[in-house]
Image (tube, rainbow, N blue to C red; front, side, top):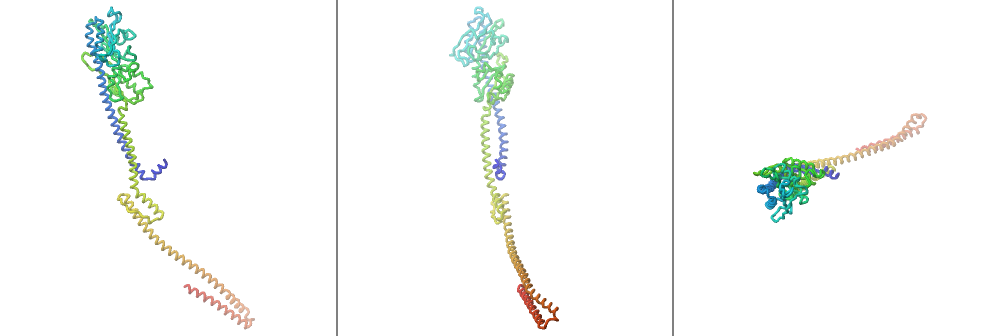
Length: 498
């Protein structure tokens, strides 16, 4: 890391390349953020519209199944009310219903206790298909029975609720006592006698598994699925058939469910329209929901069901391609930025070659290589002009340094001459001093002799003999001649030096 920082700090081309790449990355990031934000919003809107269309189709399809069951039951009902005094014929009506409508799994016609006194306390005609949960055909085997469940039918909700309300209604989910772990919804019509008194109930069963298979066939995406909730949050349609009987949306353990799931469920039960995001079974998903509305058909009982339809839409189904495209674009952008960094580095490295050459030349010039050759620049930009000016500066510096070298050489020569002259003068002065000293020494003996003779003449002139006086005078003259010879030699030496 320290080495990388050092390279960045010491290399101009790397810093320029990084600044260019960072600027491009910033602009590219902003552009991608804006583009993908709008794209994500558009995809969510598209998914909402698709889910809305699917929900509408699902509700219509489900309602068509219910309507077909209601109409088939109504057709039988009006004929049955004309033959209420024929108990055996009730089984025929049940058979006709089962054979006429493939969605009907079972049919029960039950009367109040002792309505047919000859048949005992309870009378119920009940037929159902052998294989529940499948679309029934003409070859389906019918099973006839006079009982349903382990308790009297008079205590079962499909019988009691229509009698209490006095109107045809859908009841359920109910447990199918003839098929374990299977749920039913029943369309129940109260049976009235000629006096207008409710005397029994016509109940038509539709298995929720069969209804789920029909509804779940319409899917806006491969992993999405539809749910249909009852007014209490119970599952009427769900891909997991085990939930149709044993669970409501509120009975799922809290630790397995995002709190948003319960919020969405409450919104659905409240009859709201909209969508929510939550995490379900470890998968981020959206739920798009709307109330289950029934088609208005003349003569149809429009009692409120309180159902709500929803589409569970995994986020990957909505944004899977988007996320994949995002990763691809980010990968391409990353690779592109690396390529751009390399290209910028190569380009700036090439463009800065003259600067590196000038840097090296400046270093060599600072070391004293003033004749360093700087070539002409082929560029006309700032770097080219800098190289041209640097070359002119080097030429001027080289010329000035050459002139200085010549002047320095002249000064060295003159200095050497002056040093030599000074040395000669010093030697001459030394010789002069030595000569003077020598001559002084040579003159000292005659002078002392003359001084001694003169002193003797002055003090002893009366006592000296003429021969002695003559000898002293002769000695004085001789010593004077010696002094004269020394002085002549000094004058001769001096004249030669001049």
